[in-house]
Image (tube, rainbow, N blue to C red; front, side, top):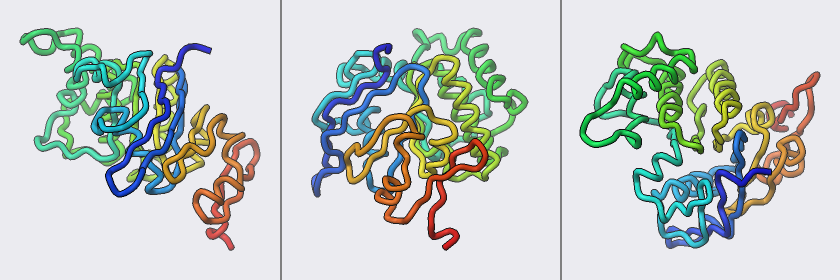
Length: 260
């Protein structure tokens, strides 16, 4: 197997009132969609913040494409990791194309601003996600699903080998959730590596080829979703009885309390 795009080794972090992450190690490889699963407070967002150097007082090591992130400057880090937050509220109401072309900031040389090539890449990202027709609209005119697609287009325009997404579909309706996960599948097939946290184990089962389960700040399981996401494990993690079954050819997680 190729060298991992993201490598986390013995990562621990504490905010001061107790450990949030304890001896976390994981690997994510090229073209993988890795679903990071775990209940609130399990350390998912803290793990992402350490990878992005929003938090820098951790112990252990985080590498992207064999380079420790602590050795990266801001520009190098932005060329290596694209980040899609759970929610984004821009101070100014940019046009969609202006928002997406900002993904080229780590690649802009000198004081000349964006080049014709930067604009071409931004438009290509919009085209790939099927939203080029939104280019001239402002962000305030868009639906929640459209805004999330714009943020993913900006991350795609960044052309980083690793894309990190923090609950990319948490506030979206079912149709837009599926649309965005399908888009992520296509992005991974084109060569990028994706790690995304979600609260829905079905998204991991349906769209991810690898999963990592965090519980109380530790990795308690990792591997193929259909192997890892068992009824026993999910019932333990979420403290609710869950059944992993199948409908025709599709695996499905059903919380027991929904029908009991």
